[in-house]
Each structure stands twice: as structure tokens, then as C-alpha cells.
Image (cartoon, rainbow, N blue to C red; front, side, top):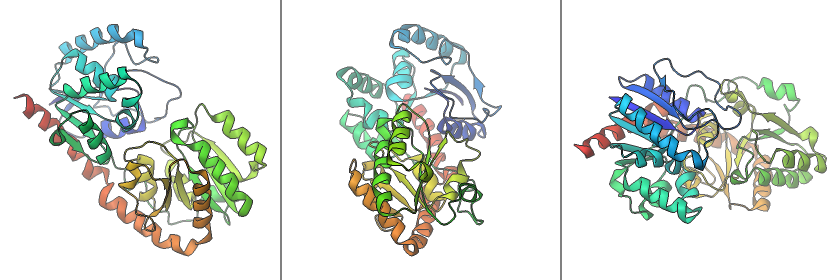
Length: 371
């Protein structure tokens, strides 16, 4: 089968899909819509994947670029003659593929494109509805995506759901003491890990505010704050103003090679994201045997049982998040059982090697729908 994989940018998630696809019998071509900001994925594309040259992929895509991109996409389709197009997010790549008129089309929701962006404006709602009406299969990672697609009239039987999953060998509990903790001098401290992007959607400002509040009661708390984004100056200023520079490590963007070390160095994973599907970083934390404290948004509710793998707190409630940090740090004995439960959940539901097969089935579903 000839697969045209059309994505917005090249991210660790894309790398995961493309690596798995490269190990199948399919011929896979990659089309990249744009290049935005710092490169988050530092691994080379698998040699079996063909990166196609076209008008997009070298700079941020603009609305006024749409007509030229659509014409060039139609040229690419004529030359490649794919058997199926796999495209997402819905309002960008999948929308262009739908406008191009190609079928069978497997549209992939990246979570927030349906759960949040679809309601951004009347135009975005129209683009979402148009794309779904011309999609043969929708691929999503959580039931919240299925329900939201249904609100746009998309049939549930045409949705292929699977958590994107993680590599359970790369992300696993550490058997040795963390060298990273030793370098930071945090061997005896309670270490909290946050690695969501520093954008309002992901609530990292709330994590820092909660950490500042909790640190006033427990000076042994430490925060590993990874990432980058538009709120960088704000977050640095908050920590400086609170006098907690020695308790927060700004780690920047961490390569995929070194990321497992940070999970192993932490005692608790925290996410205050306001919108998520099945969060890959949450699954990486679970696979690493790390108890979690996450917002009670629908995507997280599909994974976390309070008191089992960790805790939930009301989305946007900084005081509740601070209380959760203190609760976790106050009961280290309880965390032992949570570590085992977290790993067990990842093995049961977040194994990428098992979950990926659903995508291949989605391709076949889409082709069957057009016969």
C-alpha cells in the first residue's frame, strides 16, 4: 500500500508513527505542512520514509498560502498516487487533503484540534465539519475525541481509537539511583516533574504558582521544569520573585535520548493541561513507574483512578494542585504501590507495539469504504 503521511510539523509523535510505518510492507511518503519554532524531534527520519519536496514544510504556514499549497498538494497526489492519505490535524493538513478531493482519507485528530480548536470560531467549526464529512475514517486517541466527532455528525463506527502509546523498554522504572538528582544535589528532596510546553493551554503557569504555594509549607520540594514557549519570561520571573531559584531547575528542551532520565529522577509527574487526549507524556510517566498528579480533564479521566496511579485535581484550581503536591510528598510509603500500579496500567494500555496495529486496520477500513 502507498501511504501519504501528511502532518503539520515533525514532532516526536510523528517520529513514533513514521518509525513504526517504516517497519511495515507499506511504501510511505511524508509531507510536512510547515516548520514552526525550535525543532522538538532530534532523531533522523527512518531511511524507508521518503520526505517529499513541495511548497510547504520550510516555514510557518499562513492562511494566504492556502490556495498555492492546495494546488501543489494536488500535484503531489497525482505524482505519488497514494492508496490512502493519512492527514492531521483536522483544520490544517486533513482540511487541505479534504479540499483536494482525495479519497480514501484517514483524518487523524491530535486531541486539541477537536476538543478545543474546533470551537475557536465559526470558520474553524465549518472547516472541522467539512473535513469530517469527507473523511473515511477518523483516528483518535481517546473516547473524548469520539464523542466530540459525534457532535459534528461523524459516525462512531468510522472512528478508530487507540492510545498512541510509548516504548515500554525506553520508558521504564529506574533500577539505579538517579545521576541527574545527584548532579542537582536533590538526592534527599521530593522532586516534581513538569514537561508540558510553556503555553497557556498547558497550564504550566498554574504548576509554578502551585509549587510556590506548596514550597512555603514544605521547603524540601523541588521542581524539574522542562520545556519552552511564550511564557518563558513569566515563569522565570515568578520563580525569581518567589526566591526559589535554587529549588527549580529550568531544563529547557530535552532530547528524546535523554528524556527517560528525567522521569527516573522524579518522584511525581504533574500536568495542569486544560485540554488533552491521551497524553503521551502522561503515558511515559506511567511507563516509568511515576505516580501522577493531573488535571481532571476528560482525557486524563480515561486513565487515572484517584488513589491508584496518583491523583486528579480540578482543572484550573491552583490551590487544589498545591494541596496535591503536599499530599504526595507527605506520604512516600503510599507512592510505592502507586509506582507499581502506574507501570501495570502502562503495560496494559500504553504499549505502542500493540496499539499501533489499530492504525493499520484504519487504513484497511478506509480503503474498504471506497470499494
